[in-house]
Length: 153
Image (cartoon, rainbow, N blue to C red):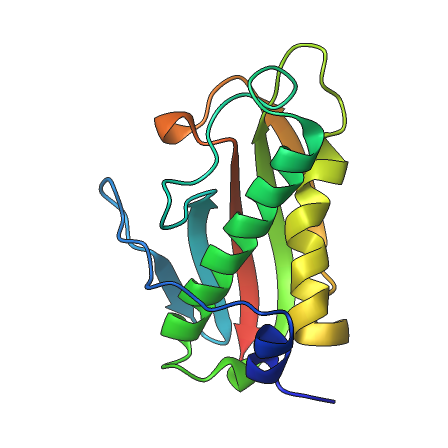
C-alpha cells in the first residue's frame, strides 16, 4: 500500500499551509494518541466555497466544499504529526456541518466529499464514524465545515 503522501500526489492534491484560527481556539489538541482537530471550513487560496447549499450553490459544489474541508483537515493532521502523515493510525470520527437551504436534504451525501477523500488518502484507516448535520449558518458564510478526531502513533 502506498503512503498517504503518495496517494495525495496521485490525486494531484498539494496541501495548503495550515489555516490559522479566526477566534479564541487552537487548530488541534493532542491528548494521548488522539488528535482533535478544530472545524475546517471550505477555504482555499481562491477564497473557498461560500453560500447556502441548495440555494446559492448546488449539490456538486457542496460536495467540492466538503472535499476542501478534508484537504484542510489533512493539512492540520500533518501539522499535528510533525509533518509525517504516516503517523496517522486511524481517522476515528468526522463531524460535518452543511449550511443548507430549507429544502435541501442530501446533507450526508455532501459530507461524503470529505469522507471519500479520507478513504482515498488513508485507505481502510480512513474509514470513520461520522455525523452530518444541516445548519442555518456557518462562520464567514462558508458552505461546509468538518472537524475530526484521529489516532496517531
